[in-house]
Length: 144
Image (cartoon, rainbow, N blue to C red; front, side, top):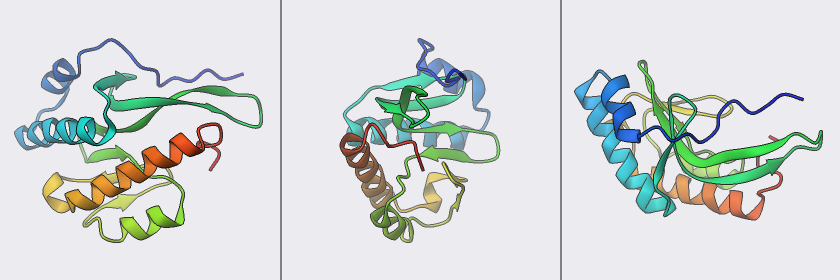
């Protein structure tokens, strides 16, 4: 059975940002996202794998028997764009995301260039909704 690659580490979040992120704007946005996501989630920022900053965790278990722990919400300040790990597969999330601003989305991530491109109060609602969803469905949160 495959092992989960993205696990919480002991790497310092600020050391990661200072060594990994080249753009001053992206560093500033990263620090702001940390402050906001800590406030919204109630959890301290932790590194997950080599490049994801996560807040809180939950345990999941697939029908196949595979199980593990994952971050509740988080982001990665990648070179091309921020990857936001904040979206839950619900009709409410689909409604909220319409007011987010300028972004792209894949199955698991929302991609933004910079914080100025999005509506921060809408991001807060999306994050809080995802945390609520995970708390209510922690055993099935990753099946979608």
